[in-house]
Length: 358
Ligand SMILES: [Zn+2]
Ligand SMILES: [Zn+2]
Image (cartoon, rainbow, N blue to C red; front, side):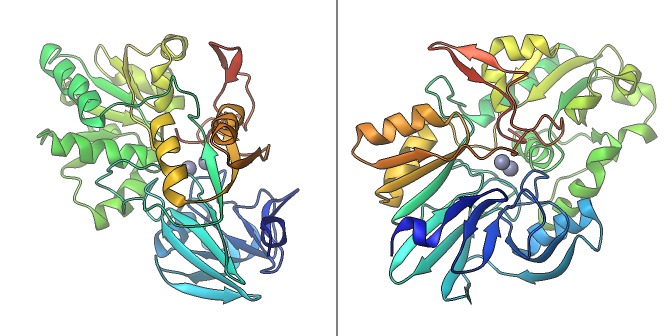
């Protein structure tokens, strides 16, 4: 068994031919295995979907009851055999329910990581490196400039600003699935026990998370009096930061929680006063620690800055190649994997919103 006999790229994305299924397909297919519920990975219209219970629940919330012909739950660590391929989902540490997909046939093991991070997140099951022959890794932040630092330190910047500017509303741009809830949990860990206000677009998913993880006093911003928002944290999707909606927040401090906030130009471009480098994707150090931890000799790189990581792998004697799959992009902004909003880093590499929900 060689890698290509088990997994290939196709117009619909990654395909396990012997199993007859696609992973996070970009267009409707008969059988899909979905790694997590971000909109660029989890689309409606597949015949059958296999995923964790949380991913299926979140897809139902976002896409409606009839998002697929049929669904099947697979818990972390359980195995089903599909067309002679043993399929197991293992935690990816990216958002609630996120999974890596392990495919095993004739002793050959391939893992498709989906999106992952190898740092602690109070709202989801921790990432585990999985021993395999072929590791298909995401590469959203695969440049050495991307080091996310400690999320607690970033949250400290927010709580400090709240104490320095107690009359100002602190509106934080966050992605609706994962980042919003993680930021709330991090604030609670930091001892922030006041009400946290949400833009309405964040409420359904946050309610779902709150069933699994205590997020404290969460309220809708639209139900709050203007003076209640002074000195409060208000979370909103990035698209709402500059619009009419934000005008009701008193003298707002505009913050944004994203791995892209490492890039100052990106923060400026968005009018962000308080950039918070908090990411749900592995940073450079995370990627180059994870790859050797899998023991894989063959690495496929997808979904972001592929070339630098491919180069890093080949320097270490690993067989590596970029997959150049197009269609995974920033979920709340609908940019696709384009580089229109990109910036040029060091060697001329364009870094864009290549990964959704960074
Ligand atoms: Zn994602
Ligand atoms: Zn992604």
